[in-house]
Amino acid sequence: MQNPPSRYRPATLLVHGGIERSPYGETSEALFLTSGFVYGSAEEAAATFAGTLNRYQYSRFGNPTLTMLEKRLALLEGAEACRVTASGMAAVHAALFAHLKAGDRVIASRALFGACHWIVSTLLPRFGIATEFVDGTKLEQWQAALAQPAALVLLESPSNPMLEIIDIAAVAKLAHAAGAIVVVDNVFATPLLQRPLALGADVVVYSCTKHMDGQGRVLGGAVLGSQTWVGETLHPYLRNTGAALSPFNAWLLLKGVETLPQRLAAAQQSASRIADFLAERAEVARVWYPFRPDHPQFSLARAQMSGGGTLVSFELHGGKEAAFRFMNNLHLIAISNNLGDAKSLITHPATTTHMKIGSEERARLGIGDGVVRLSVGLEDPEDLVSDLAEALAGIRHASHDKRI
Image (cartoon, rainbow, N blue to C red; front, top):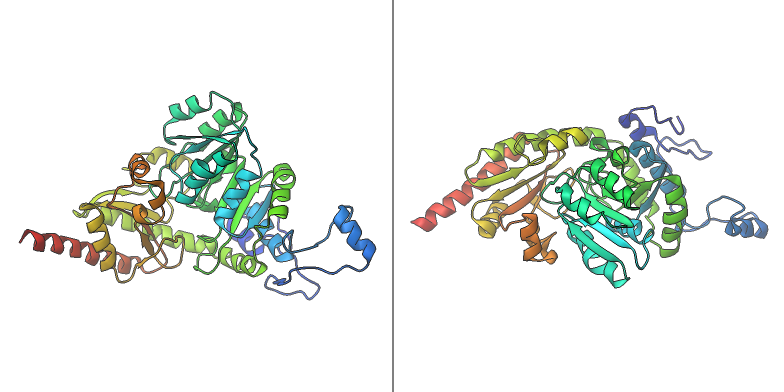
């Protein structure tokens, strides 16, 4: 089945979408592990570079394996076009810099991944681009910031690591009135749980390194949007700056996304179970999970997402000392700043992913020293709960020993 229509459901699209078989009729997608392509004549080469002949030239510009991945992700997202990149941060960087110029103005949610925060706070101003942060969950701040013209809005929902939910439709309406495009980092939700384009966003970015690979193997990113914006704005930027995804990595991502629905469903079910377990523990001050009724934006999460996702964040009594002791007590769950993996992973954002934004900014975001972020994997949920319980008990015993 080649290029199935978008009427097929996501699980089908993730297996069959975008396949272009070679004359050999292979079952698995072909891996075109080549840097360049040969021409039948000098005239053919000249026509290709002149743009009068559409064919592959060089894998920095395009490659059949990359094309299959791009078509598959576009079908899943409901987007007209997609370009893949060497990493998730390459995708964010390209989405912003392809669109912006000196003198433009960017409005961003304060709750961004550390590297994204750095691009907005530090890199963009170096190129004469004005930037302003708002508290993403407060619509009145978006209204005030977008009362003046802007070129681009950037947000994450759910955010990393505090799982804030932003009203994408409301922000998009305000942004469009101000002349801005809306770029949404949808990595925590994946396209299976949230469709930003359907909510009014213009561009969606992903770190394919996370759930799409799901095996902790390769880096990759994706940018999706309209055919016009991707073709006229994004593609020339990527073509000439070189953030190209390896064909081998693209092939692994093609195989990874085939099982995304099954992996996501299993990990999400475990995450919900673990969030409920943690909420009952005396060592835990607070739990954040979008589909728990005590989440600050629970109603909004249920309205614009179809599931709570695979990430759980929680705060331990006792701050950094308790968080470190807890993490060091874990045996099954590994300490790593990655997420969306088959293996459950945990990190301490204040000293890893969000260390460089500074203590003042972390305080504004609620990223306390006792906060940890858990990416739930595919292990048996009861084994994960047991591991967490033993590690939490270790904190309690240590506190008791200190009192003695």
